[in-house]
Amino acid sequence: METNTFDFLEKMERAGCTAFSEAKTLAEFRDLEVQFLGRKSELGLFLKSLALLPPEERHKVGKRANEAKRAITAASQSARARLSEASFDVKSEWIDVTDQPCSLPVGHLHILTTVENEIVDIFRSLGFDVADGPELETEFYNFDALNIPADHPARDMQDTFWIREDTRSSQDPQDHRSARLLLRTHTSPVQVRYMETHTPPFRIIVPGRIFRSEATDASHEHTFYQFESLFVDKSVSVGNFKYVAELFFSRFFGKRIGVRLRPSFFPFVEPGFEFDIACTVCDGKGCSSCHGTGWLEVGGAGMVHQSVFEAAGYERDRWSGFAWGFGTNRLAMMKYKIPDVRLFQSGDLRFLNQF
Ligand code: FA5
Image 1: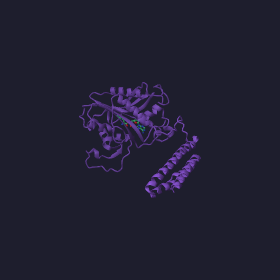
Image 2 (image 1 turned 120 degrees about the vertical axis):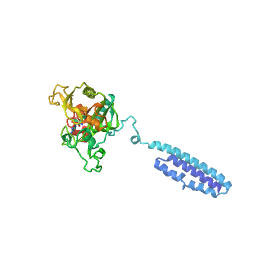
Image 3 (image 1 turned 60 degrees about the vertical axis):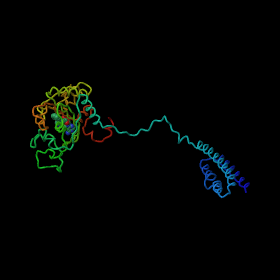
Image 4 (image 1 turned 90 degrees about the vertical axis):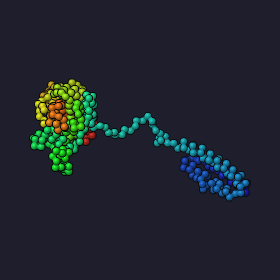
């Protein structure tokens, strides 16, 4: 019995080692693994049956069976190494580490965001803080607190998107938080909001989106961006405004830019101005961009009306300040020679990807 058993193991070992050494493909190798080393292989079943042998015989036969298994396992390992190497397909598996990575489309900042960031940076360098306010505004902050009473024709200066559902109305006319809601028509309401919680001296800018119910054309949008600037102290003058404005525009356009004031009317400032900058295309000489005038209209400005200070809770005639506001879109158009304000919100990638 023992001699037969040892012969069987000898034969099994030789057959296994030969088969692995002659295997030509990985598929063949895998079949051989099952055939010679699997749990249901002849050797596997034999090893399992050892438990039935008497202890002494089990020891001797088991030792020889394990030797056979180790020899076949060693042969299978060298076969695996040989075949894995041979099956490596250079064409499909070789990675060129010097190759350019494929370029995935990556988004970038919108041109208006870039311009807004530039403007903020310049004002910050001049010591201005950035303030913010809601786009959904109350009638009080957008109009009343800015010295534009309900029946004043100045309300018509900016066509308004009103929010039809007035869920917050109350009977108390003094409660301005209860006033009718609208989409703010300018960034000026933030003046009063800010002053309600801050005491002068301060200087702030307010970048923001605003809305006007008006017909659009190349220079008019219904939704656009503005910058408000407010400087309040004891003895602020129009001269301070002109100095800051010239400094700002010169930095923004990277060359010396003159500013001109023209008398105008905004109910929340007195005196009020419209201000122009020297044409950035012809440097004030006169060209088609400025209709031969040498000047481009940029925004509104003036000395803060004492009624506005009062609406914010300040004592009348205690403080002085200037406020001004300009269109961010219009400034971006001047800097980047963009012919139509509607392009900003067109979603046209041919336009957006230029910046
Ligand atoms: C105002 O909105 C005032 N709140 C500005 C102001 C602030 C005056 C502080 C005094 C003191 P106005 O309506 O003129 O003013 O708008 C200011 C600027 O916004 C304009 O000069 C222009 O640059 C831009 N703007 C106005 N309407 C449009 C529009 N429909 N599309 C694009 N830009 C516009």
